[in-house]
Amino acid sequence: MSNLNNSDNERVNASYNAGAEKMTEDDLNDVLGKEKKFYEKGQKLGGAWEKARLLFEMLKDYKAGRYTDVPWKVIAAIVFAIVYFFWPFDVIPDILIGLGYADDIAVFTLVLSQFNSQIEAYKAWRTKQLRQDNTTDVIDV
Image 1 (spheres, rainbow, N blue to C red):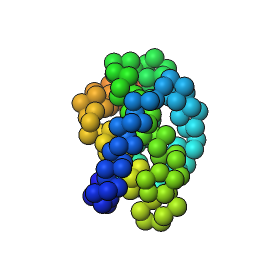
Image 2 (cartoon, rainbow, N blue to C red):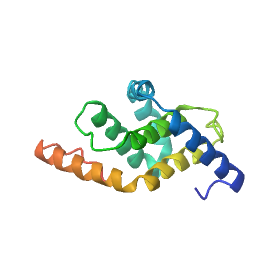
Image 3 (spheres, rainbow, N blue to C red):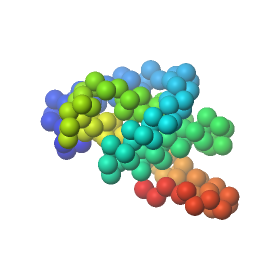
Image 4 (cartoon, rainbow, N blue to C red):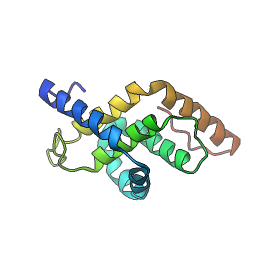
């Protein structure tokens, strides 16, 4: 989150903390219904894209009942990160070229750092599943 000043950092953290607690199953369904938009817009996350993609795949596997060994708190935080990513006028509006996605990346970074062990467990599970299915779409982050 080094691209953000202290004030923006505080605002991102406050938004994340308040927003993640409010996420519901309907929000999860809404996010999953916007998969095409997520993949189209996701390229703007630069180096954070692969990690964000892994989080989206985690949501899909959770919703489908393939991967449920994760607390709702983790799922809600991921849903919030993606909802936040879709908001064009968040802490730093997305229309600001060069800076607009710094806060979006910061939210994904918060989720990744706060729930690293659960995300790593999912990544290991996913890698095992994809290898069993002889699929090569392993997301290496």
